[in-house]
Length: 228
Ligand code: DX5
Ligand code: ZN
Image (cartoon, rainbow, N blue to C red):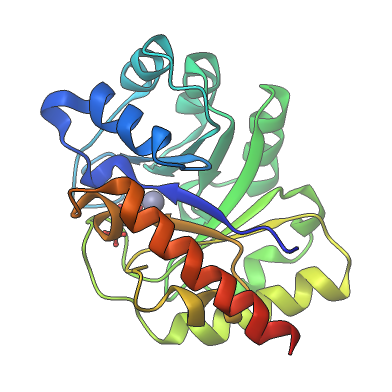
């Protein structure tokens, strides 16, 4: 069966007891943890650095950690996040002068590399470098904050990227980030995403186990709809 992965975004976790809250969401069945890095420059918000990621590793958070860099520049942070225990490092094409070099830097540090597209960023950035990617992240909101509404233009963009990946038989995760909830996840999956970043759509519920179970149920329906 096609595998759908859930990556709770800890931007919506309780920062006053971060380790405990992240452990709780992992124990509830998360596949990955999505780690949003904001610098109050590329985006108008300020969040977490590599020390926090390292302390989550020391707290026995062992699932893959998917670092989403919303910073400018990015290159100096890549070795630090790799050393702290990141598995995936994703950046926005607008945040570096040399996309190809930044992708190589991520790989040289033993991580998988992703490229993130804002709602208004053209997919042309995929030209010439798509074979170097392990992950494509489509933002369904403007980056910077959790709990915003999913922009419907993302559906079309997802279908375009899914077509590109499948036609070229590429082994690339297609991740969607922003405004993903129980109510719209089946339609999003149907448009081609296979990794779902979910912040408020999980952390705003008191029972993480229950909401993750309901989300997986929705994804199962979407899978059956897609093969019938
Ligand atoms: C927004 C971040 C997202 C955010 C998603 O800039 O990249 O990862 O946490 O939060 P929700 O799921 O609440 O839209
Ligand atoms: Zn993110």
